[in-house]
Image (cartoon, rainbow, N blue to C red; front, side):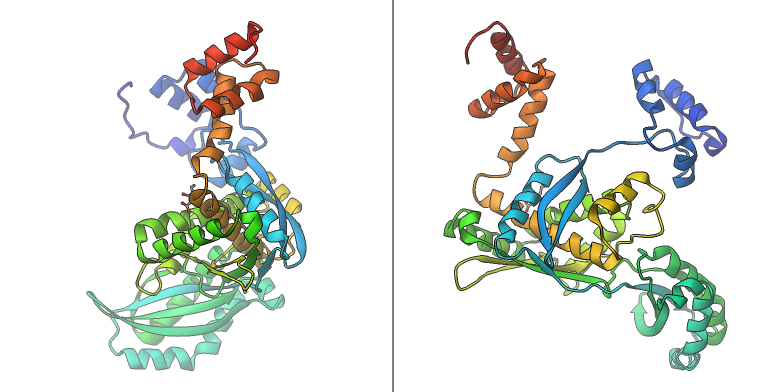
Length: 426
Ligand code: MEV
């Protein structure tokens, strides 16, 4: 690797193409690399430049469709953007199993976000609290003046809650501004409202405000769903039993709980990416919620019904938007929303939580039966077959030989391809 220096001043002033040239030159990219970098796909350089800084390209990932989802009696095709094989197939498989007993039942999800304002250096916390509560309607009015349209649509700042915290730097008063952000994810809305009301609050309370920012622990946007997974379709009582044991394991062991929840987020994040939503906010919220009672726990629950079927339930905060942010700017996010046909952010959260449960169930089902690698290997084998030079009409044959013999080496695949091409019957 060539030795490079990273102190490039004003990279943002370069055009996108100049940046590509500069980086290519600095790290000695090949002309093929540069060709890939130059291919921006469906995103124009203007669009890319308005999304982030120092853009040098656009990064593609596969987008798939999860099938068989019925949620609150409505069918959905769910777009998922993810690099991991088997995830889309697994979700579809779990949704097919749930369908036998009516699919997923998801509760209504509200759209209230919390913004936190941190008051420090307070002379007297009680007086500060009183001052804020006395002027609550004025504070809410100031916040709402910033987003009159939201307010007209019956959204906007609706309440203020106060919380005293004893920290190692002294007592602090935390103001929670509650805002109904309707169909937006809402971080930008609540951040700008919090910033707008801060000088007034500072003056009211004679204090110093540092942070004024959204909380990603969106406890007013809890999404909940439930589904019954048919015992026979799951593979019988032993699989049901195994899933209950897998959950019991996760309930007492954070090492397992973290992977259990990762499986849930495989689905939710893939949908968030497909719809142009903030995936980091969702992850942060989910894992904070998983440890809200002081112990990191699995986000889903399983039990059995009278017929031995498995009942799955999932609950977590889901702050997703269908307007604002990237959702309308990114053409693929737009297409995803059309495929989904959701009418509100709350409905999208219902789809997300159902997808999360399906993903979790599918992972557990695989783990307690054939293991997770078999599904992974099916796609992997196809890739190896292609890499080994199998023509399109032989890819399936070569990959099934690799799977049957449980050998996934390229040299082995090449040998199979050559023998098949030479007319050998394998
Ligand atoms: C892999 O992406 C997800 C799983 O590890 C989830 C789980 O273990 O429950 C299979």
